[in-house]
Image 1 (cartoon, rainbow, N blue to C red):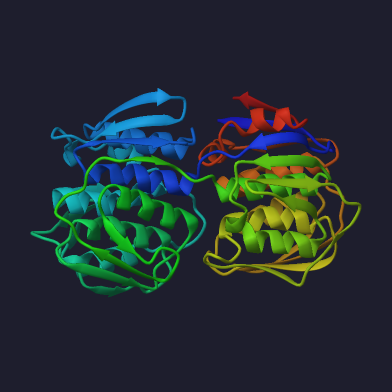
Image 2: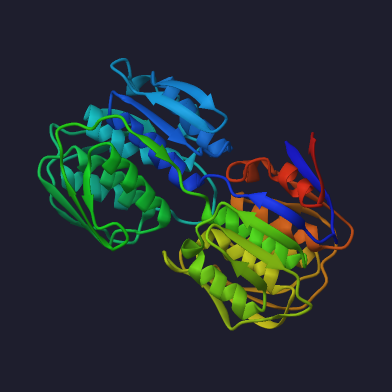
Length: 421
């Protein structure tokens, strides 16, 4: 177990570079299974979830070699065997669900343990199964494993029951090598979904409809190796922006795509945050007062991402008035509210999806616990702006999505250290 000890009350100052997108890296690594040829992936974030995905690939026989610090050479040659998969990693990692589409397309028969991950509410896997079964897969369960088998995959029109990012990605990967044309209606269009599609097209896939909710995939006989640079992580960019605003800091956030944060920036503007966007950077400047806004509601892209719901809640504790936080996607993402209240926040959990936060309230250092990846990042922000010392338990969760977060915050002037117990 590890924990962070943070002495708060210090504004963040300086510059920080955003790393590659966690949510783009994991499906792109999985997609490398679709070819026996060599792929080169650049701008890989060195975070737990991504490194574990690489471990899973290696356990099956995929050859990897680091060319540079964040550039990886990957070759899923003839010796790759899904039966050798390290299921102990799969069972603790939600992102391993992204192996379904690529394994089905290439091997036609495999089994996989039910993926694990953050406990943030119901995350049904049925939408994945329905979509892959529509292409021709037969799926059964046996002794805690899902067993997949398909004589051949045949493209067709598929209507997803919800805007599922990972189901869209799995279906895209499987459909690239299916016979005929697959049309996905109600497809997710998040930036990382589009980044996966761009990589697949570089490999020789024929995918049209990037950025719209109807995606068309013309199946091809085989895919080839390709080189790709992963997009910057908009969630990380948003997290640093909110941390700067909450601490009344002055920081420049480099290596971002501002258009992927359009609605996030609009909400920051409504709150009264002072910022400036340029081609690939965002500068946050201090303000003396923040104003509450009626509602911060998470939606599928281009809405407010659910992964930034909790950081926005911390900012709301420092705004004048009452703000409704509404996570429309997950019902288990408000546990952090009780930790904020321990620190002095005035917040009420109305139901599993909604909380009311009234501010401004000073926050004070406390012993608090990280319940999941994004809650952990949120409590770090709270501790940074709080007066006194905070201890945050179970910070390994944060390592799943933020690369060496404490080292980067130290460079911005934060008083933070990691302690191993």
